[in-house]
Image 1 (cartoon, rainbow, N blue to C red):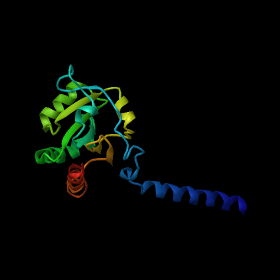
Image 2 (cartoon, rainbow, N blue to C red):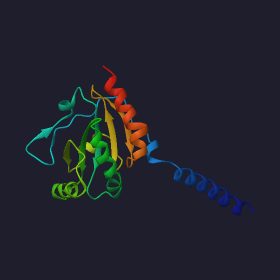
Image 3 (cartoon, helix red, strand yellow):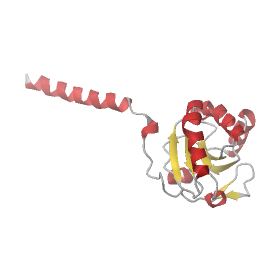
Length: 176
């Protein structure tokens, strides 16, 4: 009898852990970088690779750092939302084109619109690793001092923009 009960108990325990894991949301994964300085980088701009961008160039400004790729299906879903948000001019939007081919990325932006004030290239994924990127898309809000104040994992929705991003950006802009 015991030889049947033990595997049954083990199966039930594994099923419970699986069910709990399936109910987790990737956006709930906390970032160890919150309220810490945004990792430094020196990256070529997508549209003009001879020019470089570093977070120090954005010091004193509130900015969004959106990790995207032309091969990313979820990025395509959030892209119209970013285009709408860009029209508000609430914050500078910097794109991190992640593990992508520059020509594919340029074509994607030409076809779908370009919400980014500037987009930089991260073909080998090193910048993404420094920022703790789990996958694309991810979006960070960085304050005037260069501190990461919020990390959003997954596609940004219109609700996220209204309930999270715009209020946070307004608050950060008001801070000295």
